[in-house]
Amino acid sequence: MLIRINQDAHPIAPSEITPESLYRGRRNFIRAAGLGAAALAVSPAFAAAKLGAIQKSPLSSTEAPTALKSVISYNNFYEFGTGKEDPARNAGRFKTRPWTVRVDGLCAKPRTFAIDDLLKLAPLEERIYRMRCVEGWSMVIPWNGFPLASLLKQVEPLGSAKFVEFVTAADRATMPGLALPVLDWPYTEGLRIDEAMHPLTILALGLYGEELLAQNGAPLRLVVPWKYGFKGAKSLVSIRLTDKQPATAWNIAAPNEYGFYSNVNPEVDHPRWSQASERRIGEFTKRKTLPFNGYADHVARLYAGMDLRKFY
Ligand code: MTE
Image (cartoon, rainbow, N blue to C red; front, side):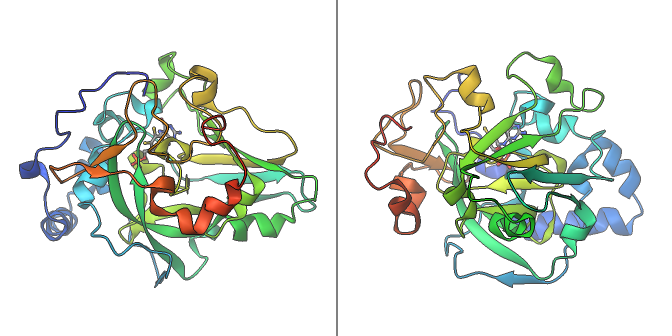
């Protein structure tokens, strides 16, 4: 995000956006033809496995989801490079099994969760969320996952836990972007405990009914729909309860551009990008950005009395 993009250029030409039905048809063809391994070597986009039972959620948006092809090919994941197509192109060697997530810090029962055990938590929920990137584009993504709160409750947070810190994978052998001094690796993020326990905050294991692909943060990533996309830390390895506000990778890199809260706020511009409007991927006309990304009814009360220009 430290790299300037041309906001007037539409990121993906509509002709490049394949309807999901066609895209899935192509996947099935590749599987049926036994080309799985060869296709994997070319593009990690073919590695997804179907998830089990998925339950719909009243917290989902009724807006039309963004085409799957765009969701998996237009990404920010700097560990694989700073270009939007780099993550899908460069994540082929990234291993998401075996994988564990450590949940510890200020809690009574710290624990290490194996990803395959989390995948067995049935049914996972479908959460169709509006997602807004600080760079000025947005998508609607049908995530599959579960509330972060349900994981945190299992470790029994202590009363002294006021914040949650998220740390993500940093494997130099398989993440070529780590060679770039763009961020202070590993990528870290943080939430206040009430934000972390909020029902809208989820851990996603999949999208569109399939396990996450590496470029979207496999095997497990954070999703906080009322905040800018960069809060959604990908490929989590550690979740820690703390009594101090955690340092976050983007805040360390550019404190005047990225604050701790990062709530979507059309009234507070980023120094380089207006936040008043956004371009939904797949659409031409810009739409107005809504306070808290349209989730104000759910979350505005968390910030009652706070100056949101100061706590950006
Ligand atoms: N997580 C890690 N580990 N590294 C990153 O570079 N980029 C963030 C966020 N999570 C990032 C990350 C940014 S800037 C955005 S907008 C979202 O991931 C993009 O998520 P998506 O590619 O699945 O849409």
